[in-house]
Image (cartoon, rainbow, N blue to C red):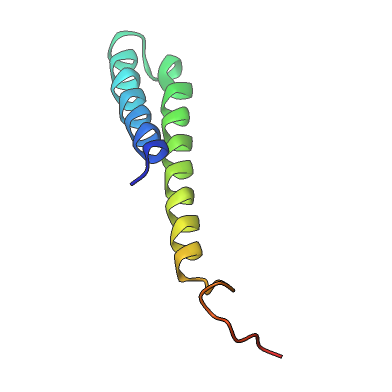
Length: 69
């Protein structure tokens, strides 16, 4: 896990906690944007994971000296 992924996951967890606090004190309408931001960060984290996995599985030209014709 890279530093960017750790930051995204930590921010997402922090926004869930903040959103929960806002829900208790102000109501769900005030905390809805905070929860949506948290979900966006989670999706971004997952997207980065999928992209990294796809890059690892993709054969690179450096590892395969024979080119397909």
